[in-house]
Image 1 (cartoon, rainbow, N blue to C red):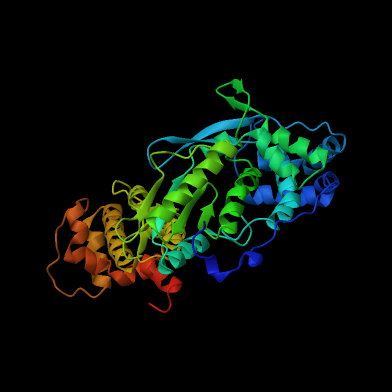
Image 2: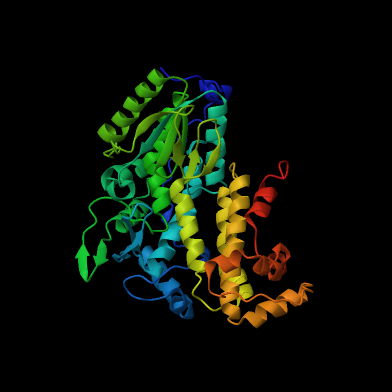
Length: 442
């Protein structure tokens, strides 16, 4: 039996599954205007070269030729995706996440396919899915969870799929696509993406399962494969919120949560061939324990703040940007490097309950910038000159160590570089970003 009905919708109000079959789509994919727009998307997203080492800039210099070749190979059904180039990026827990970088040409074809297929599957996708979908965002998913908690769904199934993107079974995925898309040429094209293989360290490896993270079409395929989970939970009126492979389900009771978790594990593992991480998946009483979703920690009492990992990563990055052993133009450092990071980070995490923290971090960032500026001035007479500009009329001028951390907290450093100084050089303050996101609280 399901939990209480979500949003007071009746079962008849749940969005019906689209039944239409799509037969002829490949001609829409290789249509020249679609390929041209696909390239523009690839160019906007930038990215590195694939195994052929052809960059986006190099591809564009002979764009007409490259698009003609792609169109003709798609029309003649001779197109074959090249292996992806394997790279690794560090994760917050110290491990590395594998990425597969397709060639620019393959990215264009993937983007062309996604542009045609995405609207078709968007008609079927449920409202509980937010990741990598047009018009949807992580903030919308976080808002939904907060609403579910406010509605009394306090028992949270905090679930984790083990290496989801790397373990999606190809045959079952294509079968899911075939339920809607019957065009054999499109299905073969998708199989070509999935089975392209991986080049790593000069060695070729077959792709027997999974869809490579880094592929343009991978997020859409991942959403298609998890759609049965969304559909099952929606039909049973469970409060599921999913962002790609990360999801939580809010329930009213402990027993209800245990029952739902068993059904979810059975669906994902027995029917879909995935693995629910036994150690990272748990049931949380949100009034007594916290849980983390999309880098945000939902604390007891429904407060939402950046997770400890997110805070640590933020401070490490700010320290890296404002390292004290550099001699730089501080205004340029702020505008070109620090501000873009603060804007992105602040807008992502600023929707939570972070006013006090943002205010504290603003002060910490300003102190670090004072330390960088003192070192960049090098000589104490430059500090004296700035103090006089600000109105220092005491004949006695201090002698301080320009490279000492404690000097950045001194009266003299604050006099030469007051809060107004940081407005003058255009520093983005986290607190101001918070107030923009919460005008009613500011």
